[in-house]
Length: 121
Image (cartoon, rainbow, N blue to C red; front, side, top):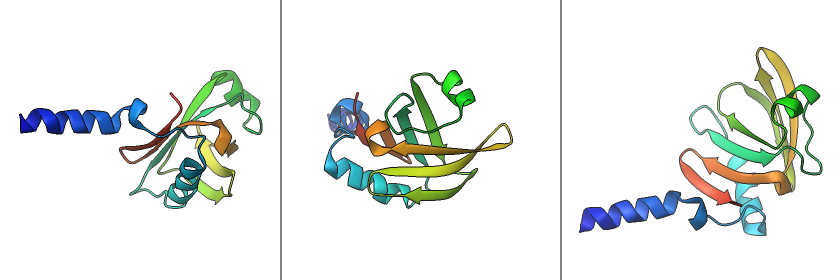
């Protein structure tokens, strides 16, 4: 019985349904604070809408990811700048540096290590 309840608790905690929407003020504060901690030892996963207003990424990436894109900030990233309403970062795709600008309003899911911080799904 205890194992079943523990499994249920773990499943519920990891479920996108149980996560707070990314569009809330509290979630945006959490996103900003967590992004500032992104390192090799503390990866951050961001799923965002590539068509959302304010998103800036090269045309070749827009063509490859016409609706949604996932980035993991762990190893090959630099110059991460976090503002109250957005972040921008320099990433490498196939050896080429690429600058991304992502408003928090475009974020659909946000993970810190294995913990789902917010989800709009």
